[in-house]
Length: 122
Image (cartoon, rainbow, N blue to C red):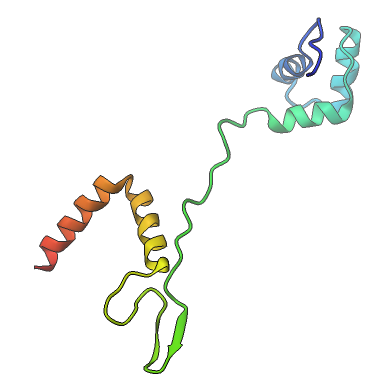
């Protein structure tokens, strides 16, 4: 485990300096903080400057949903991979259903959406 140092928080000192001097270069920050007794490198200053202001975790594009674009070859011809003869459920269709459930916020919401869709289809 890292040893806790006593003394000023170097990162906070850098942030505070940039609040007062937003156009300062890393070397200028190093010199100014050295006068206060805080020893930092220009690379560390650049790192803190680049990460300051970023909030929260990185966002993703959302769930990836596989599309039924692959085809399988059978004696009857080609069909989408998610559809089997006789209407049976395939792994691909289950993966797509799972993505839909996640997108709608849970199984209950997905069931409500399917019920509404069924009423529209009738």
